[in-house]
Length: 391
Image 1 (cartoon, one colour):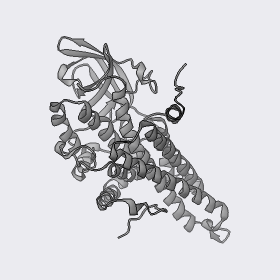
Image 2 (cartoon, rainbow, N blue to C red):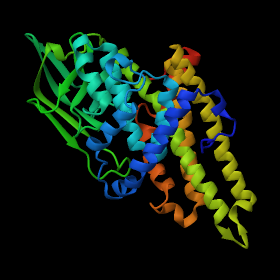
Image 3 (cartoon, helix red, strand yellow):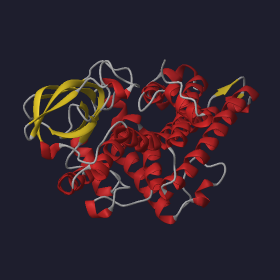
Image 4 (cartoon, rainbow, N blue to C red):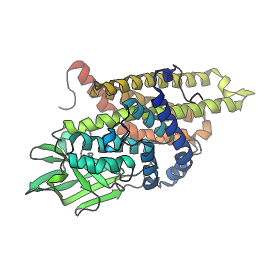
């Protein structure tokens, strides 16, 4: 059976059978077990129950899918990981946030910078969904300028004492383990903090206008003591957390297209059914132009993410290339959500229809994992050799 999706340039022909099977598996799961509950969760700002959903995702092998099999993950390609993100965000951005954070911001640093003991302990539990993680980098006073972190970790004998706060953290209040980045006397290092340890507080942020179906919150550290074994031994300097962000940004480039595709399909169906002046509104030139422009932008974004996925699989993708994909495809999603909402008319503001929810969610995606402006400067620096980040 041909996969039902937006594929004007037959990109399916470039995918492997395994990649297609993974995509279909995720589509079926999201349609049957998640989509029916998303609208209520968003409307009531009552996050989806990840304690129930995460183990199901783990069974399907979609958490940390690119992590090697020896750690309980699927060991799949980055292109498969991208397709997973696409299908998950097609339903809701908060769910793709969970996948991208768990995979690229929690499992990846443990795999890349952790000790053998840390990998063996945490990666199988995270891949199975039996444990949930979060990534503590952004702070109340520090966003794009990561080098200015205010959270500190001071060596005290064989332990570390952590003080500070993190803000706008996905899965903050429910995480069993937090990958926390702090400034030490030897630069920025990563630490693993378990839920419930003394001096570590987790809190959920209320009254959000975006990502209402997901958990977002704050982490607080007050003379929080962790052992030397909780330091990620391979982490060293600013490059470590930034390398993790590249993993998640890659997932966003695919996920944003999932949201864009859902908006396009909703608008296309509506344009064929809604009649005005005796004809379907899809028969009018102005409406067709909007649909065509949405399709063009989605198709360009698909080609960008597909090629980036192959570069990721080869290990040759550069951070600036990832920034280009994140910047472009989130803008595509923003454009498609806005245009679909417009085409649906008054119905476009109803939460019974997905575009207005995608429109709200994508504003968070536009800001996090590097703002649009920061990705512009990353690409600008790459092509000119002239940094423009500060004065």
